[in-house]
Structures are given as C-alpha cells and as structure tokens.
Length: 278
Image (cartoon, rainbow, N blue to C red; front, top):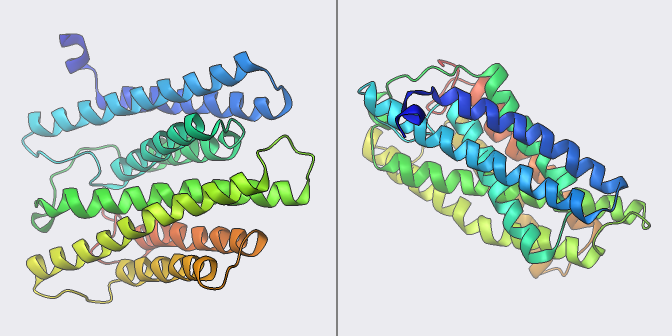
C-alpha cells in the first residue's frame, strides 16, 4: 500500500483526465452505435475516471499534510476544477442509473473532461499554503455547497441542451422531451437551495473573517446573478407554468452566468475569490 503514498497526486488526476477523454469518445459514439456493450463501457470508463479523480483528491490531501499546509482538495484553481468535474460525473452517473439515460453522457461527460483538462493544462498544480482567512471550517461548508451548486447547474445545462436538440431533431435517439425537461428541472430545483445556502454561508464566513456580510466582491455579485437567474427559472415554471423550450433556453443562459461566475471572476477580477495569484 505504500506505493500509493509515494505517487504524486497529479499522476492520478492526469489518469482521470485520460479516462474522461476515453469516456467522452465512447459516450459520443453511443449516439451512433446503439450497442449495449458500448454503453456499458462508456459508464464503466466514467466510473474509472471518477475513482482515479477521487484517488487524486485523497492523495493531494495527504500531501498537504505531509507538507505541513493541510487543506481540503478544493482550495485553488486546479483543485476547484478537478473537484467540480468529479461532482458532475458523480451526479450524472447517478441520474444515468435512475433514468436510464445513456445519451446525456454525450453532452455531460465532455464537460467533465473539459474541466479536468483545463485544470491539468492551465492551472498551477503546486500545493501552496492557504491564506489565513481561508484556514477555516467555513472552507468546507461554503465551498462544498457552492460546488454541488456548480455541478447541479452543469447537469441541468446538459439536460437543457438535449431538450433543445430533441426539439429541433425529433428523430434523435434521445429520451422523450418530457423526461429531459424533468431531469433539467429536478437538477435545478435540488441544487437551488444548496446554492442559496452557499451564498448565506459565504456571507457568514465573510462576516467572521472581515467583519461584514457583503462587500459587493465580484464573486458575490455574480453568485447573486446566478441565483436570480435560476430563481427566475423556477418562478417561471412554478408560478407562470412555463415549460419546454423557453425554460430550456433560460437554463442555457443561466449556465453562461455560472461560467462567468466561476471562470471570468476567478481568473480576471481581483477580489477575495481570485485564483489569479495561483
């Protein structure tokens, strides 16, 4: 068992990225080849990627302890991206089993791969000490809830894209529009309160660390925009009875706000959430 301890965490993350790449190709091929064996292989390769990703996270956490800078594996850009990809893959696999959705993987798994690949090729993989304000139990609560939110919105986006494809090309071998609509809606209705909790926890943490709940930090502003966007989506569905195409487009545009909230803010705006110092 000591061999595992000696291997650097990036080996596991790189292996996971390769497995995600393979899985993406197999999922994309299931669209053309409706073969049970290929579909099983697609799910298995994704599962393998998730296990390798998990091994990377465990190994990286152990390494932070060895280096005397202990922190959970979602603290800098590299860790955040790989944690996000892990959660998206995990939620998708669960939905795939529950709803027998093989083809949604053709949209979602390439997203999992993209997040992981972006981390491997772009982000700094160095393990660095956390700044003092981040050395807090809030890091677990606030960040984990935020990333469950990111992951759920990503899966919802996958469902919305498939819905719009099915709407445009009715003969595509996809689940019915009703099923896709339901999955999209469920993903968002489940993670919306979790995203809300993340914002509240973030405010509580800010108050403890800096003595103010809200400072209009770029990330706070965009997290609020994401919240308003998906809040409007849920309102349109529940109160106005909107369904189908209109709400699918709302999710697509909502996901753009999610990407801005994560990438643009963390990479280009200075602020408490900036990873620009990585």
